[in-house]
Amino acid sequence: MDIILEMGIVALMGAAATVAGAAEDLETDVGSQSNPNSQVQLAPQMGKPHRLYNKAISGEAPAYGLWCSTAGVTAAVLLGVKASPIVAIALGSLVGAFLLGMFAIPAHLGRIASQKRYNQPIYLDILRTHVFPIMGHGYVAVFATLVLCYILHYMLLHPFTLPLLALIWGITLGAVGSSTGDVFYGAERHFQQHEFGTGLNAAFSGDVVRKAEAGLRSSIDNAWFCSKFGGPVTGLTFGLIVFLDNWRTTVFHPDLGYGWYAVGLGVLIVIVLIMLNFMLEKYARNTYGPYKTLEEVGEVSA
Image (cartoon, rainbow, N blue to C red; front, side, top):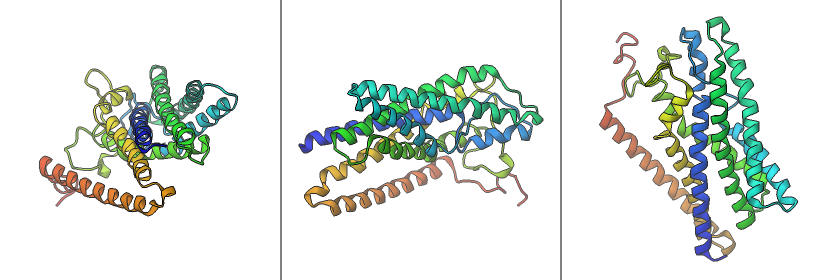
């Protein structure tokens, strides 16, 4: 395949991954999954009942591995009977989204019911208004991931099958959402009443913000907030992973004897990203003030 055409395909994969990352982060924001979910679970025990959705099915990585691989199996079966790729990917993603919804409902009800002793009610309107946005965002994330896997297997002739690629990239997608997106959700949104840089001290556990800009907060408000930064930055992270990883092996193709050049370029990219991350954190410290200790915020005596 011509290298220019292959680079265009790699760019398309990066675009699909960017969409998948943003949708995945917003889905978990609506459902309060992964790291911040522990604070949602703890809040009633700290005397703070809430109207937030509460569905940590598992960590985001294995959860999205399940949704994407299930969708990949469905799509592969449909492709095997000569279905159109678009139809196969669309129906496969629909199955993955339905599976996500099936897990999300009992996960939320079970967790909220377990908080009855702390006077935490079950709000049926929260279930009704949140499940479909969860499934909708999940559908977009799974669909874009399947597009990425289809390109890898059927156009770039990757030896792994479509379901296996979907499993691998689904786990990667969930891991990126957990490591990147949660930072701009758990700290900034749930604990926005605390001064920047204080960190999540033990005394803050469960002290989540329960009032939105208008009325009581639900997890839909979290998705609105995160769509401005947390979702896009998660999409950018996953998109860069896909693009940079495939770009280096496209330019320095192992079949042409340039495999070690691709490895070296990958190491160089990681070093550059570490340096950029250090510069960004230093800029944040200098711009918003130094991180504070427990003594400085008055949580313990000096």
